[in-house]
Amino acid sequence: MSESLSIALLVHHQLVPGAGAPGSTMALAAALRERGHRVDVVGLEIAGTGERLLTHLRFPFAAARRMRRALRNHTYDVIDASTGDLWLLTRAEIARSSTVVVTRSHGLEPLGVLARRNGVRRQELTLRRRYGIYHGGWRLHEVRRTLRCADAVLVLNERERDYVTSLGVDRDTIIRTAPLAGVAFADTPDAQFSSSVAVLGGTQWRKGGSDNAGFIVDLLRTHDRATVTWVGA
Image 1: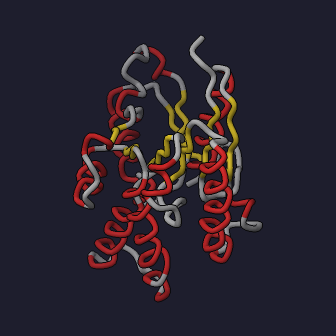
Image 2: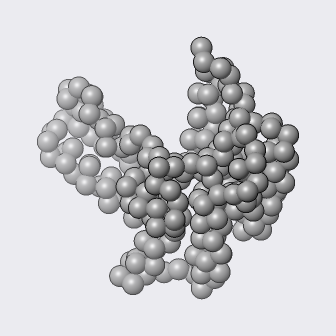
Image 3: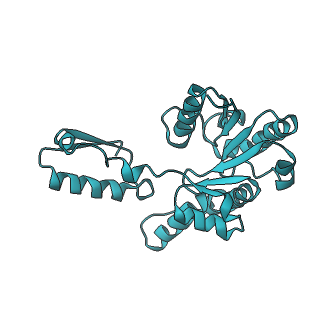
């Protein structure tokens, strides 16, 4: 087995197993531990309870205190934080440490904001007036700072890679993670589609509702014995 690493995984959500970004972060931690690595998962709990805006505002300060101390003490070999979580650290602080600092996208927030604003223009949704203050405003500054200070940036697709590059981040430090959705059914025997299929998740456009609906339509048209249940709609 390769050398064991000490790793910190940060995510700006309460640590709820199976719930989106925190669930995938906890699953990653479990997989790394199975490979013999020591992993600490740091979530929103260090800043307060619930998913309140005040807790989100406090989280980067609590995370920076903890990770700044870890950088000085070389506590971790790798610090992996979701985008926007380490905006209070500087590139100089990270460069002085032997720790590798990575930031990872669970859906790049600036592109999400752009999609929402386009949705408003198309009259598909309505945003609260205060949206532009934090989530559609200051939060984008936090994300940009984190992207620029990290040793490496993990993105989901080429559009995210292009956006990060436009911020002046060295393209060689931007890594596209393995795409999963496009190959999820690639090796599944055709006969399995004669049984029922469950789609988990909401119908919101930002959660890929239209993509799920298109998949269901194609499935039912080509597999007349298939049935579909949409859970969480």
